[in-house]
Image 1 (tube, rainbow, N blue to C red):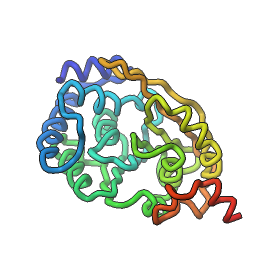
Image 2: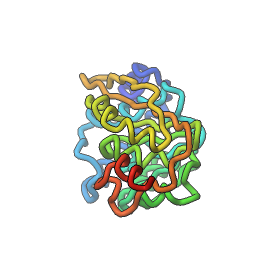
Image 3: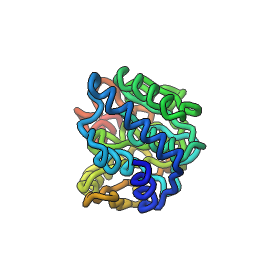
Length: 243
């Protein structure tokens, strides 16, 4: 696993040391062990975990935007946050998830990997944390992977980004269609799409996308909406109603 991780990371343009690869191996061990009692992932076969979880999680690093204060919204089992922290230990990372069992797992995994310094673990819904002054517009970058459609995800994530920072959405092949549908919502929420980065996942035929959205102004105070409203009523309609 060590050699394949180092090789795959190099194919992405990421330098991974033997110690970092070993830390990811320990992550794999605790992930598969704990997955027997907590639903963390459907992917457990080693080669698939390497490509579809670990290497996929590393794809934002070559963009040079994972630095300073970073929050992973909807972290789940820790992807991409824990992998990014392992490869970029200078990052000050916050992992946020709505399920306590997953937050507990991520804390244990970080300790097993030896990377728990500089990580904060938050058990909360994104809609609630995004309205909390401790987290609202406090981060240089926000990452999120396979959590929701782009319109909803933008409402959950952009409130965390400080003006001038970036929201990086790790998406599949339908990213462009989702972005077109969410274009007006992203604008309302204070974002501007800069690029869609294509990332070929080593050892697979997968071509994933990273939507790079810059925060150009503050998010209106009415967003994010609590109580499931972000998935029930589009941002555009809610904003027009408020105005």
